[in-house]
Amino acid sequence: MASPWKQICSIKEDYSAVGLCLEAMFRGYPGGDSEICFWKERWLFEVPLCDKFPTLFQLESNRKAFIKERVVVGSEGLEPAYMWSRLPISEEELSELHSLNEALKNYQLGQGSDSWCWIMDNSGSFSVSGVKEKLQRAIFPDLNLTFEWNNWSPKKVNFMIWRLIQDKLPTYAALARRNVIVQDNCCKMCGEEVESALHLFASCSIADQIWEFISRWCRIRRVYALELKDLTNIHKCNSGTQRWQKVVSLVTQAALWVIWRSRNEAVFEGKQPRVNRMKEEIKILGYMWLKSRVKNGNISWGDWCNFDLLSFGV
Image 1: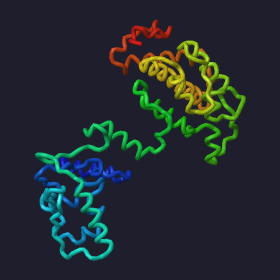
Image 2 (image 1 turned 180 degrees about the vertical axis):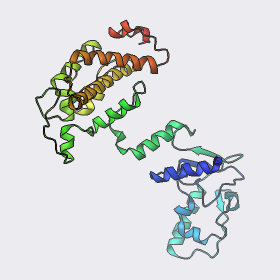
Image 3 (image 1 turned 60 degrees about the vertical axis):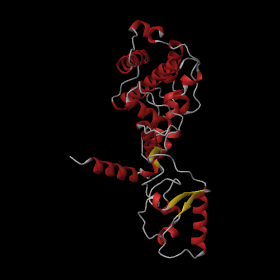
Image 4 (image 1 turned 120 degrees about the horizontal axis):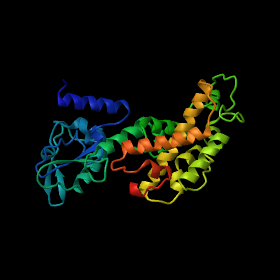
């Protein structure tokens, strides 16, 4: 089994692979007798001084010197105590020296021991969610789309819908854009139009019946979608508590999942979509997801079928 430090180093390599620097997520706050490295660690700026002032760093006689070895507390703030291999003489060296001296003059050392702060969160405390968000944004730059992950739905459903609002599902229209030859690009659900994602999930006659059912069952506004992202924001267009909106989001995700699965059955198995069966499937899936993923999700099947969420705390 790898040692803890070796595992930490491997995490650093994983971050570097997606363009992130693990060290940059922490910042040192030196105490009165600091043993933070003056040049190579992040404390005065968001980058180490060796990167901020590279020409000065080349003149440093001891590049591993601590802060306490390079500054002293004077009457006007921190005063430098440099040890150069030779004095700075070039215009670039003198410019960097002036900038560094000004930054030191306005900096105050803390009291007691050194401390390190996690700068990815305003609280200054490390959190797994902060790391997760940073990684997601690095790996999936399109996550700024208006899509809210619903942890009451299965992961595969969230991923499918995330791909949907980017129009990356392999509908016939999407396949044609990728130069995939399809003999018949007509929607297999209704047989009326070319199968684009917006048609399949929003304007297809089968989908239209599903959304009419959802609006009546959940007692929400009639569903209209001009863009794919509108289908994931249905809960936001209706007033209600945050918990209620999350249930409505769960239902709409179940509807999108059932529409896509019914489409695939029509394409690959030749099964004709049955709207009544799809409606029942949406109810059953939504109920199963709610009961299995929500703590204290005490709601009966009868209440769920009536969309009576009082027992669910809504």
